[in-house]
Length: 592
Image (cartoon, rainbow, N blue to C red; front, side):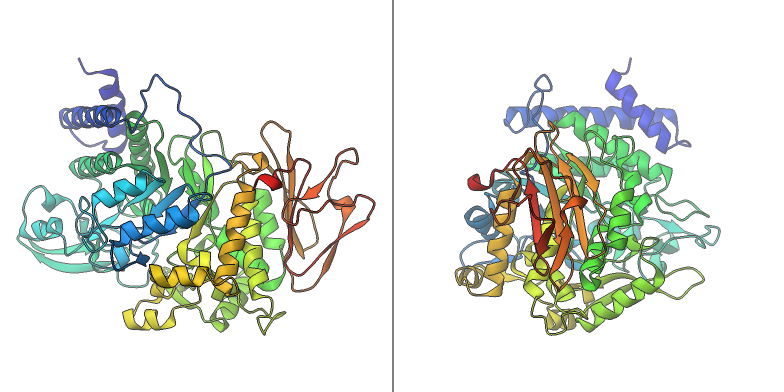
């Protein structure tokens, strides 16, 4: 008789593979359960996971913050890049950041790691699994499962071309009967390309580039292969699993080949397995999509633990470029609170830049056009996507956050560029969810235009690498812009981590102000602490009517950031250009 676990896994497989023979799926379910339980026992034996009889602590709280970085973002002469990253983290960031997302650190055929050649090996130029283990002993590590596609330079793909099993059935190939007319594209290049195989000419599916060939998840053996990869990552100390481009995973003729029910069913299966193996694993879906489609990846609290808050970067940047909170406020009001066991992952900038597609339906075409014009004037490059029957559209603005915000119509000389930049992060730190910061944003990096030109890749504009000695020198010079930004961000994160009202799941209400301001009210889950997090989005001083926020007269209110009391006798609060306040009735500022 099959075990209860095997029956549960089999039920999930049946949801995905309705046409597969039951005996075959039964065998796969048994293999999944056996491998998962062996991995679980291995982790317990290593003292890196707790018994299921012990309730795990919260997976996240107000101290949670993520650093996003490449494995080789920091290098030194006497250690591997991963070891150098650990040294920098422990010396500078460990008090305020508890999680490190290391972007794909495997051998790769391109796209700076996202075209994986070997999923089970660390790129030797970056270090080794021992280096990953060492980082995992100091911080929670998030690794990418680049699950939608793999490199055409891999042994898997070479075996596909040679018609060898099992890889001959790993990749998505279609014939003329497959209707691709409705397929949603994130890029502008042709979707299909011809290759010669031992079985003849085939049309292979390439969502992102010619080297990134999509897998065929209609094959359950491929799914089993990726489950083995997940189990390996967990054994190597990975605690957060990022499912890259997962929305494109499953393809069916005549559909958008995006967000299909089978894709959601696969995610639910992977979540089931990771929950079984280790109580403290967090599954994160990367779905750079319009808002409602992105929200669907929470499922019924049984898919992603965290989803990226993809509309936030373009909306926040738009609000600061034009001093207008209208679109950001409307979106914030429409966002549902994350359910128990889930959270938003907030960010403003990434290794790719600022995604524009998630703002579709929120910003008007006119607003988007003006934003693109301003970003281009500030030095941004752009990546485009093909749209059936229409002209191509901007998919993302390739830019650093600092360069994106450096100049505005109201501040053409960039006199307030640092204040505007810090306002962006102060606003983000106040929002419901877990904050994440891309490593180059820690220092206010400018566009690396030459790097993009040299690589002939627009996304390289925000992928500058750092020498550890040069970075240490920069941060030890307090008068430099990079050191000022770094110091202020660390101060804000330290302050934030001590406020229970900033728990990722604490209550949030969007405040109703004129467009010059954006603000939210946060309340701790025990209702003891309230914080009014408010930002002036403009280059001018602004007055805010105190009656527009409910400061109870019987309590003392203080601004956490400045450390100053809020005078209740004044009818207005005056904000300097781009100033933010965190007004609270319960202060832990002195402990920060």
